[in-house]
Amino acid sequence: MRAGSGSSPSPGAASPSAVQERSQVRLPYPHCRVIVLDDEVNTFQHVVECLVRHIPGMLPDRAWELARRIDGEGAAVVWSGPQEQAEHYHQLLQSEGLTMAPLEPL
Figure 1 (cartoon, one colour):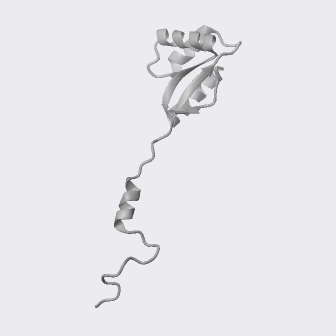
Figure 2 (cartoon, helix red, strand yellow):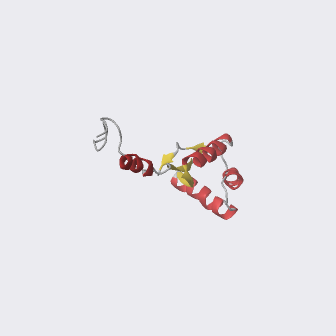
Figure 3 (tube, one colour):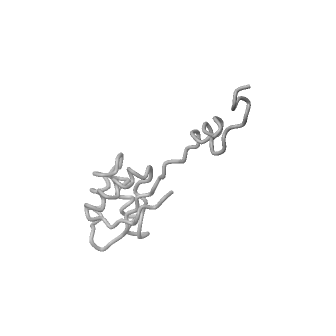
């Protein structure tokens, strides 16, 4: 009989099923909320223009609704989704002078 034939795997070696199980475990990609805060600097018009310019699919009516929510409630979630995109939109809005909350994980 050959050495190793029919013996159990060597210590520390992963069995094929353990390797397969590990490769099938997928962690969800982190998602975040982009939140604009109320301030005494930006006008409603500026907030609306920034949201329409930088948030995909943002229509003026929705941007006005969000601007009113920011003013009335102190903050509003203007976009949520994958972290990388959220970071991009957060940076764009901040570069326009909007007051931004830190990205908030979902």
